[in-house]
Image 1 (cartoon, rainbow over the protein chains, first blue to last red):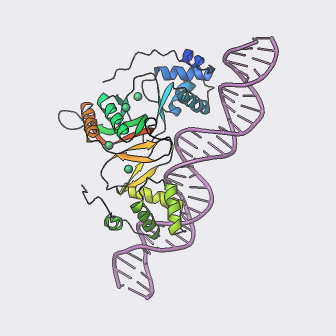
Image 2 (image 1 turned 30 degrees about the vertical axis):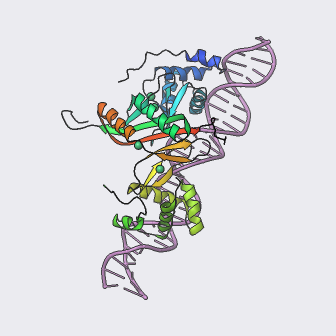
Image 3 (image 1 turned 90 degrees about the vertical axis):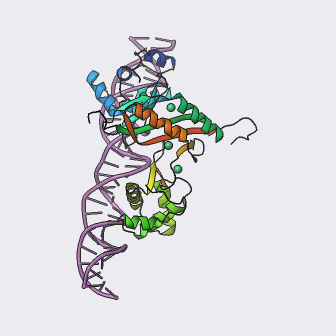
Length: 148
Length: 148
DNA sequence: ACTTCAGTTGCAAACGATTTGCAATTGCAT
DNA sequence: ATGCAATTGCAAATCGTTTGCAACTGAAGT
Ligand SMILES: [Mn+2]
Ligand SMILES: [Mn+2]
Ligand SMILES: [Zn+2]
Ligand SMILES: [Zn+2]
């Protein structure tokens, strides 16, 4: 459904503009995020970062993720069970389906659902600040599909 | 599977039937859950339990919650930020709206959304095992409503 | 009621993910 | 190049939760 948008974001520029100092570790982490197609967690980002610059610490990854989240450059997802996973913001809003067998994260979007959420909140007298819709499932087996 | 009266769960009976030993701490915790109208976390349950029987430990609360979750007697919710919160199962399925200012949890249900989720998963080739829909918002201010 | 023993408990210590204090380092405005 | 606040790596701390273990207890059998 969703073939990733060709990477575009001039992260460093946007961040500088937001008053964030562009350091060596941050450059590395930003580059990793920019080309991450998956939804890596802090440790995974750390591992990828060390490949590029062995001096980076896990603390810095965590601190950077928090900072980037703060300025709205990334989104944090706390899928059930595991640690927080991240993805660059700036992509259109979408929700996630998590494959319980593989951990794979599949993105989807339903304007209908988004609308219904608004209606529900409105009826309850609330404004939605954000929401979380996660489907946990497994590949449909049966029919003509070969099993996993 | 279990379509019973919406009120008054005979927890102990059901648990005995599931091969769970009914101990003193468990009795206490079950009684707390049975009359909890909110979605208390482990620590809160512990506090309420100590009021009834001061000998209960937090570990036992955690162990019991895990056990009850295992036999399907309760649901665990990991709302963003805080610790896991629990509620008796056996109530009809619903999702939650969390008041960001008060932490209050409001329940709602949309058959329409549930359906749409199914459709989406189906299109992606998945069967939904379970899902999580949480709206985070604040009371609509403006109009004739007094502020909080 | 008494015995029996696997299931259960409280406690403290361990845990995994994340945060933080601190002294050393570094980006970047001057 | 200089100066200094922002940032770093490291280790220790934190938070919610889990676990090892010896003592205890529910409930099945007598
Ligand atoms: Mn995504
Ligand atoms: Mn509920
Ligand atoms: Zn959405
Ligand atoms: Zn639902």
